[in-house]
Figure 1 (tube, helix red, strand yellow):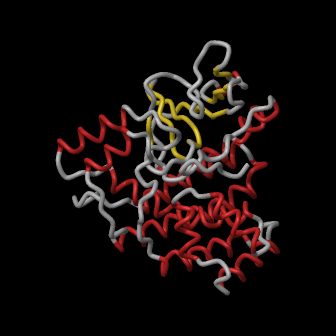
Figure 2 (cartoon, one colour):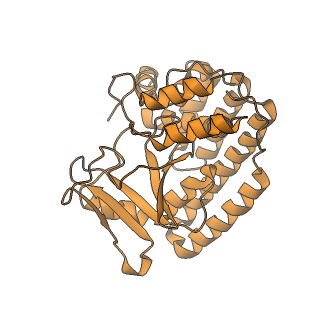
Figure 3 (tube, helix red, strand yellow):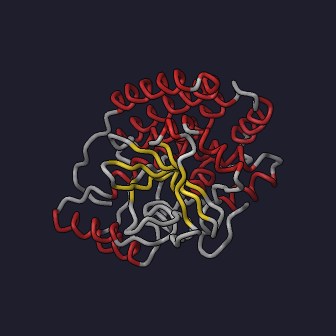
Length: 315
């Protein structure tokens, strides 16, 4: 990890921006109000956790610029395969806190079961957040089934608790102390052509178009990256007739969908005036669910996570 003094994340500003976005989303889509209110509680809790993790100086882990660039050049996400110490004493209460928020939804019974399993340490919280940070869905699925829990629910709660750590980590990764290091990292990032996010390996949640430039935004750690050509974010397909961009609603010309017939994957593409802060990407994702409905009605899907160390992720 680079040792330069990094710029503190302004969590109060994040809350203000988030509240503005939620108010707009509810005005545009009143049918989503219940979902938005749940998301509001979850993201506000996530922002508080970011602030707490920042104050701890997360984490006690180092990686040199040369190592970082070597992994990117080898098409390996930077956090993949790293033994990163996480503050389990902070993230364990966070797991239970997110369970409490979700228990106020229709999933109350299932969430109560998960809460009991975590409190009894039938699933080790430290192992759970480590697997989440490593994007190891296979391990979480196997563990969940073993204790009679929904793998999707366990994955969701683990991700909610780990997203703040992933965001703080990636902010540290790309803040080198020397200009030469910064140039090296930018070059390696510009040449990145591996699968998914160059920091954590997740797929993008969406693409943001700003001043004609297309950035992919990670669904997990919130990082931005771009590709040298306009292509499918999943399989790299870009041939005419295979990869296309559609505008479902001409009155919302800034909202488009990238469709790939090669892998049947889709990605939402949104025009923006300013880059969305990483922790708030989920707000845009939820507010544009009409694009998800359009894509899935046409037979397209959001693919599962890229494989980890050659092992297929769960469908």
